[in-house]
Length: 83
Image 1 (cartoon, rainbow, N blue to C red):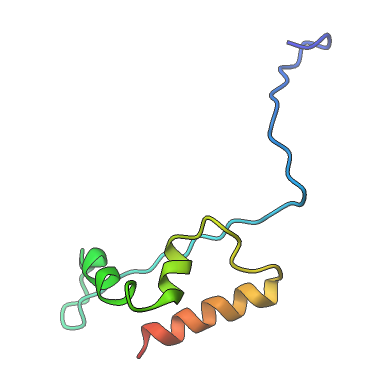
Image 2 (image 1 turned 180 degrees about the vertical axis):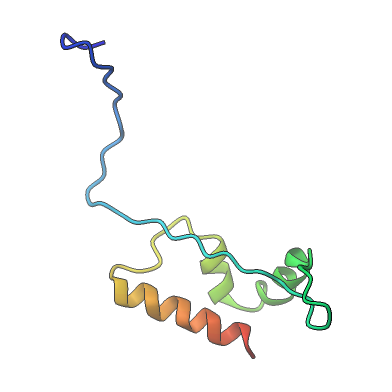
């Protein structure tokens, strides 16, 4: 505790602030409308052959530097999902 009675918690500093974005997709059965638990099947089908999905789901590094770049990245993903 500090002299003022407050608890001070040290946080790691970074060169520049970042924003994390989570993209949640619902895999839905086209006939029943029920959610399907087939994410692994879908990822296995697209990720090995497509660097986009490897970047999207294995993102330990920044995907974009601006809001516009993030919007374009997710717009590309949405378009790929509707193919």
